Image (cartoon, rainbow, N blue to C red; front, top):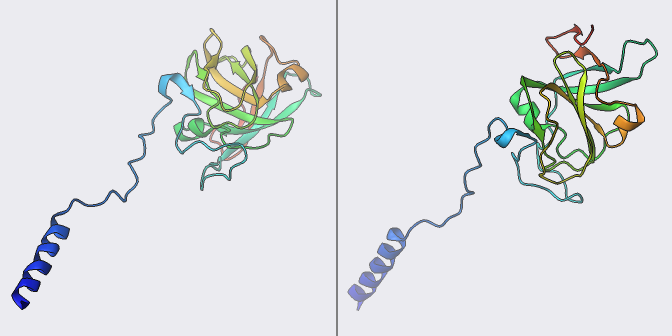
Length: 198
């Protein structure tokens, strides 16, 4: 009788040991890289709804900032911008932000002069997307981009910089094709001084 119990216990042990492990780990995270299909604001973390809490670490702390002046006049409006220079910063962009004050924005330093498309994945606020050439003149504006959409927004003219502002700011500030911008780095940037001066 005792041998029967031992054999039964040993059989159960063998079944448990030889069973495949349970799938208790998360699937591997998708590989992140430089903008699939030329799109900025790709998806490093799971999307969140507008009313959800933000994922941990969702908003990157940008190390650079500066001022964008709209033309050469001393009294011209000045915008305060965060600067996105690295691939990680360009990919993060303004995702997950719930507010962008008037007169504030983000300036993207793109890696080369060419046409670019931006989408609004994980971007919770409507934006004006302003495309700027190497000479710091605006080459086109995509106004009032709708949040949480993946339609590529761009212009057919190559750009080297892209400025994002809250929706309606381009119209309010009279930013249009041909507007000349000046940029001055104010913190955390290797390019100190006025970059967009004539």
